[in-house]
Length: 417
Image 1 (tube, rainbow, N blue to C red):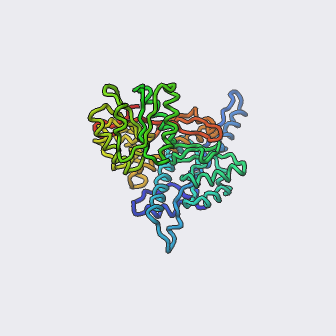
Image 2 (tube, rainbow, N blue to C red; image 1 turned 120 degrees about the vertical axis):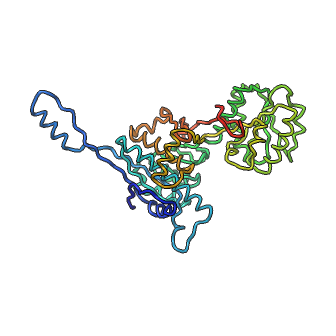
Image 3 (cartoon, rainbow, N blue to C red; image 1 turned 180 degrees about the vertical axis):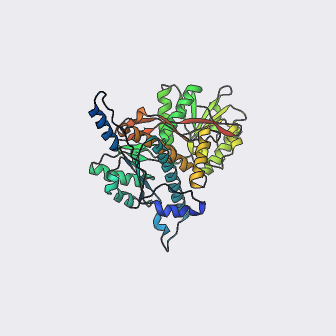
């Protein structure tokens, strides 16, 4: 394992040289401060003791963090090459690493000290599983990664089976922690069920509708949203709100017309992410909205697709839940971009900002008191992209539950809650 220290600014052409140099490495930035011991007053002996104490450097705690990311460095070897998929994952890993390390470098100015170890999971569950046996990882104060659910499950499965109690962060995936089932897991990206619950709460609080129409595509994937949404509506309305959930074929909404109100908002929820279904169904709903008041709630992934047209979504008064949103007018965002450009001579991506937020949050918790990893519900945080509001679930670990509700206004999504 090779050490990596603070890097000189990089041109974009040197990006892969950095990638080849950092993985399966340790980036160490420990600093030792000399601290004078408090002296009792009144005797020359105590003054001498104070001088001796001042000459001895105090031992400052160095916390060890292991990053497990899918760089897939084997594809840099002679005769191998990155595919578009592995290249995307390698870029993700490098951007996240640079943001995370920039955060730790910033925190060292406060006197905190870190040893950052970086490992390549190669986007392979077998590699992730083998890494769980690595002594350097098993003695870490915190593990961040693996990124993808299958790799994470393989890694934590080994740790849990061996009785190792290491806090492991799922840094990017919103996959339900029930798929991992590790009591020491921290899920940073808010899982879909909390998006569905937040939408249900917003609908109940702001509309108190007699009915909510869920337009199903017929694909089982919809149920990941529908099930928690129904539970939320039933619980919050005390079963006073009726759920109408037909499967829509070729955009046909005629059977719903007799149940619609001409005076009150008709609240529709579409949990699908299927492009063909959405294109046809939203067009039909747009026609319906010319005769009836319609308010629509969509899947959180809608905020990141280009085929959904803002003018159509605005006419439907579309709401979308999200956890991360970049405000490029924010002084904090602008300051981060300037600093990132200075160090890396490239623009920060979404993943770089996520790495920075998580580096600042977990670096601060570890720097102040590592025992606070057991009290994350007392450690709310507002970062560049996201807020962290953790709850503890037995057997599932810590889960971020923060969700924003956005609505289209002036053809762009703006926060309403």
